[in-house]
Length: 133
Image (cartoon, rainbow, N blue to C red; front, side, top):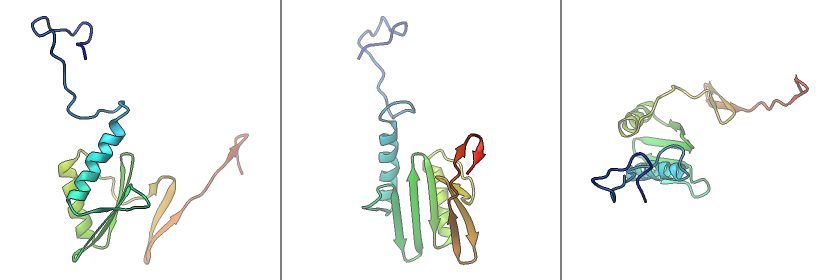
């Protein structure tokens, strides 16, 4: 590595900056983010799903949590509201994040609460000559 042009230090010509963490825009950023986030989840007792590595589950005597990570979007649900809220607090202490409230849409799927759980629907629209078909 070399110092960038115009940024060289004549007193320390051999010194360069060491990157402490991956930044957006670098090829390695998504992998580094996933490794850091999944390590955090595994440390707290989550298990990674073998069929889908972006799906994590947590089970204890106090309840269960299911977390889905898609790039930098997180979908979290659980059996007990206080367990979900406590984990959101834990996540926000570790990572810079914004809680957007209950999910309404995720990856093109509409999520609606019902008395028996959640209703998931996906409406596919095709646009052809400015009309919906």
